[in-house]
Every structure is written in C-alpha cells, then in structure tokens.
Image (cartoon, rainbow, N blue to C red; front, side):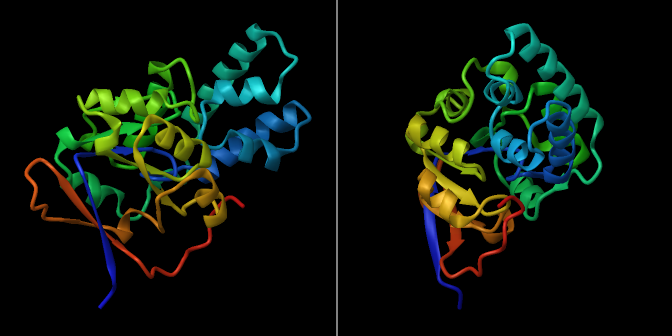
Length: 237
C-alpha cells in the first residue's frame, strides 16, 4: 500500500503553464526566436522567462532599452505565443482534477495575459472548467511578488492561509509563500532542488499524483499525496 500525506484546505490556487497545461515546447520556441533576434542566449532566456510575466522578463533581459521598446517587444511576444499552440496539451491529471473540484474552490493564477491564458486553456481542453482566472492583465506586479496569489485568494473571498498554491516555477512558489499560502510544487519543469530552495512545502510529479478525498470538515478539500513517489525528470534544467 502506498503511503500518503493528506492536506486540508479551503481552496486551491492553480498556476497554469507547468501545472495544468504543458506549453513548454511552444514557450521555448517563441522565446528562443526572440532571444536570437536580440543576441541573447536562447537557453538562458527560456529559463529566465519561466514563471513570470513576459513584460517583466523582457524588462530584465533588455535592461537598457526604452520602456516603449519593452512594451512593443511584449506585444510581439504575446502575438507569437498566441499563434504557437502546437504541442499545447493538458498535463496528466489536470482535467480530472478540474472536473472534480467545486468551481467555487479553485482559481487559476497565471503569468500569461488573459488572451493567451484563454487560448492555451482552450487548446488543452480545460477552458470549460474555469470560472475564476487571475492573469498578467489583472495585476501590476509579477511573481515572485505576492500580488498574483493575493488576488487569486481574493477572487474566492478567502485569506491565502486557507489556500494551497500549485506551482512548478521558483518565482511562483515564492509568490505563493509571500502571499501566506502553503505551496505544492510539481516537478513538471524544474528540478527538486530548485523547488525546495524556493520554499515548496510538498513536491509531486503532477496532478495525476494526487487524489481528492472526502473531507471530514464541511467546506474543506482533502488532498492525498504520495510520500514515496519516484521523481520524474523535469523539462527545464
């Protein structure tokens, strides 16, 4: 019998890319094209951009450019990512989790813009389950700032301390922890060492690793996690 750990919470705050949707090949293609255009190492750009808004990443990668250039490059990035939907699919367990969760007990919190988030969720066959969505279009400060997950909890009328954040990126883990939530990390894109250093409370392979159990507390969710899972290699190292 597999040993399990149970988490109790009021709601889940779910990152999109790397948690619900596998967009890694598309993201890597678009950011590599952009990096080559600006004489930046493509591998470095892909890792640097992971888990944050594209504007925040562009500002950091082009520190001496004019703000108008940052905005223009960000517009280019959004169009390019919306157009590249090849290989964008739901990650294991994502559809099963979303179809089982009460819609009032989860919110999707992503660094993608609202337009890009909708396109990717539709491509992955998950859009029908989403009622609450916090995107880069709704915030002024990107992960690792706590604002995204503070807004996610507010969309559910909850204090973040009653929520569990699902994240795959160190910046997102730090955002969730800074907001006051506990964080369940998924090893879909990053190595365990990076996830632990960022402050993850638990680590699993993906959403297929967990089971939504019956909670003895009304209004609460109970999540069963395996304690001895064989780690899967991440896509970004």
